[in-house]
Image (cartoon, rainbow, N blue to C red):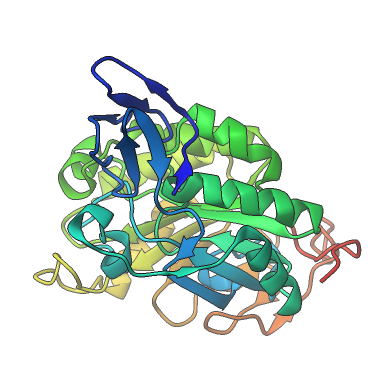
Length: 341
């Protein structure tokens, strides 16, 4: 239990939380949509601080990040809770857990312990992932500050629903983010995630503007977000922000509340990839299927990074340049020598 940031008191002992785009106005003793931020006598507290539901060492490719420190491992942490309610969530057992429903799972792990664990396990980055890092913002921010001092990079794997104020607070310490762009229709977000599209688009733009490395993931769900028209508009947006944003197209596997859907056919992913190429997106990767994960030069098709499932086989790139014709390949390809891990 720790006093929350990014809120203000309003009438009748209520509080207005502006950490995420829901802008919850919370009555006394009640929780926000995320399930971990509670109004206690007119003050907002985070109940997720220092209590993790998961901590693992993952290949950074699993985030997925393909243009940020490829071949390295990332120390990954999460608390319970989420500000989305996606019926297709792959981590629903922890993301949809709510303290007000009696969930008390988790174990203590202080920010300094996270940083120490990352260094001991030679992880040049810490990922705030599995659930939604925005909802354990204070915990992530305190950890990120210590990590920055230790020369360790910070990564958000996020649904992109943070406010401008939240991003302003975290961005000096944030190095990379993978943002789920789940659809390009507001109706999809409202029906399936209980959220809205526009704040996610705003976050992708702001991350890029602030120089944070950005990659985007879209889970292709048959009959939900896989039409040519929608994918074309989504790709047009990404290309407008930057054609260098890597786009990860993931195969849907039935689970949680979406067990009546079929797995995504490979043909649908390949069609989405062609639509992305037609919009000049330079780096497109397929997830949850074998292959389609190598990085090639967008100019000459030279093989730059050869990957195995959730890992790396070989990297052939001269800093930020294709060794064939010297074209710049955007990303952060190597751990800098000053990183003390």
